[in-house]
Image (cartoon, rainbow, N blue to C red; front, side, top):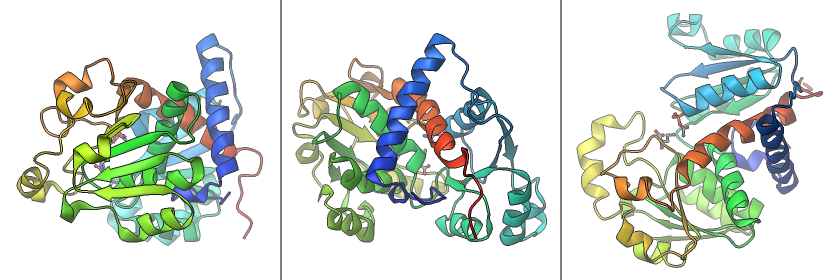
Length: 309
Ligand code: CP
Ligand code: NVA
């Protein structure tokens, strides 16, 4: 695998399987209260340009449970906020920490860190992808259905970052992804093409019922992502008819689960009834961020953490 995780495609199918297996193993150890200090003495820097609950807390607790340490770094408090360049920050952080997780507005910011960093860079959400989220999603699907191959996931809503990583995971895992979005909110055609060229089963439609038909999982995300607040009114209009309701869910398979990366806006992309209903797997999904990222951290920051440059 690549030394960085900027995209879910930085993982090969074998890496992904290893991470999900390791996540399951670490989850069991944690449940039994067995210590697992696999990253003793290691530190993770965490740069957040935007808000976060799950990503911040799961990475921080994850590093603690692995015997390491995590540092929350607000760019406004770093010299970055006073104009120090990313390339200088990246090189200096590399001298202190063993990996850096970054949540950035622009994916190009992550790429710039990765270019200058000597330690692994982890994408904690950009405008392009959210690979750590999708690791947790795949873990949740595998726990619920035993295997990923052929599992049908319907994505209903905005075809942006989380959706992109889900689409790109199709070729790696054998899940089939049916995406329903309004016309102007489709996923990036380059991402769809890349997934399809690699053998991923991905289809696009504007019809939520068509996407959800016989799905094993129905997945949604907010209609107004962080940084898009100015377009809120326009977006709420565009996404009318794309909410996950009990009625839409009735087109899915009987065993279908509901996924949401959270935070949720009840009454917008999902109803309170569905989020709180028996099909909802969202709390397990959120918990799995912790287990999946711990496995990822072990993989990236374990014995061979320094990039060879
Ligand atoms: N799903 C997710 O990344 O949540 P946060 O924005 O709370 O980190
Ligand atoms: N699409 C959302 C995901 C939040 C985890 C956003 O970018 O705000």
